[in-house]
Every structure is written in structure tokens, then in C-alpha cells.
Length: 115
Length: 111
Image: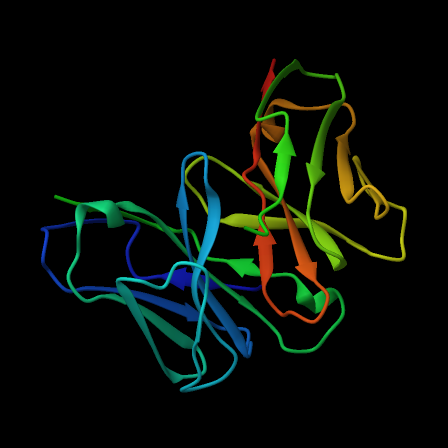
């Protein structure tokens, strides 16, 4: 069964802390994505990656960085957490091949609170 | 912003009734997808419809696509309490590999 896992369901951090959110997929997918979800704004793409060590900025990359050292793992890094980064963070993966596989598979989400 | 919009933002119905939600988008697309999100969880893919298709069915789900109006609708027939969730449309624009999600419709199905 397809599986995307995220390192934490809930996380509480202090302003200025460095925060790591990890995502692992077991489907050998090439593409991986990080979104944040806020009420009334839907899902917004932060970063995505098409391959190991490749990364592309999404719509709201400011204040975030990513790392993809292995195909199955995609990390989102908040270099210095701020209160406006309090949000639900969702990781997703999809295969590179066009077709029905264009759908994305999501992890359960990490709800981050920055105090 | 390329973001799509769902309408209505919230919908409340009784079990057994049909639920219809709509999605409008702004650019030419390769395909349009619908996802469901149960409270506080990740999204689950429901159905994909390609730009050259007008209607698609999957179980109790029926999706239509009107590319001339840049709109889609999702119909859930004979709703159940377990259908209570938020529903999002997402479009894959021509020439792009990233989905653009709408803002979602919150559906409440009461027993």
C-alpha cells in the first residue's frame, strides 16, 4: 500500500528555533512536494523536487529551505521559525510518468505551532 | 494567483441527499483532480478527469468538466455521514508538473 509518512503529527517550537520537518515515501516516486495549509487559503506550494538533490521553489518559499539527499526523503527546514509559520504542513509525492500517476499521495500532515 | 476556487465554501446536508460542489480555475489545463481531506489529516485522491473528457464516474462520485467555462463539478450521490470532509479541486496546467489547489468546500453530512 502507498505510504507517505511525516516525522511528527504535532510540533511546538519557539520563535528563532531551527525546525526540521521530515517526509519519507516508500513508493519510489521521483517527485516530492511540501505544502502549507491555512484556513481560507487552501494548500500553497512551498518547494518541490523532481529528483535527488534537485529542488524548485514553489509559490511561497520565503523563510524555508529543503533538502533531498535520498530519493525517498524530503526535508523541509525553517531556518529561524517565526509565528507566521504556524500552520499545517503537508508532504506529498508523485511519480514522474504522465498518466493516472499524476495524482499526488499525501502524508498525514504536521501541525506546527510557533510560540 | 493561479489558484482555483470552490463553491460553496461550506455545505450542510442530510444523509441520503446528493452533494454538489463546484470548482473554477483560470488557466488551460491538462487535467483536473478532486481530493478529500478528513479533519486534520492529509489529502486523499478521489478522481482525475482529463481536459478532453466531459464526465467521469467512480462509485458514488460523478465529475464533470467544462473547459470552455473553466469549471468542474463534483457530485456525491446518496451522501453518508462518512462523507463529511473538505473537498479540494486541483488543476495541472499545461506545461507544468505541479498541481494548483483550490480553497476547498467543507461538507457536513448529518445522520
